[in-house]
Amino acid sequence: MSVSLREFRQNSAKYREKRRGRRMNSRVPVRLEWDDQGGKRVSAEAHTRIVNPYGCMVVLQQSLGLEQHVALTNLANHSSNAAIVVWKGTSRPDGWEYGVELVAPEMDFWGLEL
Image (cartoon, rainbow, N blue to C red; front, side):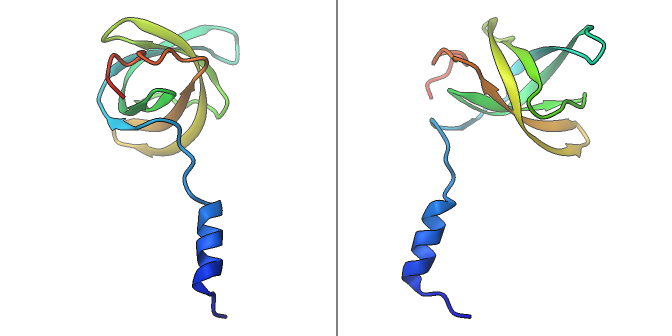
């Protein structure tokens, strides 16, 4: 089965990454807080690998579920924001990778020019 260049361009445009804002590799210390299944408040410190104005990729030892609501605090400038886990990667030696989206973020949350 052959695919014409025109068909390829049309299909690849459909699946192009849809990211908001510029991403930056940056290791920022953060704290995540969430309620476990029993309603107990849990807190853990972690770090980011990538940040953008709308969220980050964070590395965390604990396992969280998709759509888990968390409070994310940037420990470098003490800014806090509500957030949601939108992606879960694989477990690595230093922890799980998570995509975390900030809810109603302030554009200077990371203290970086993005």
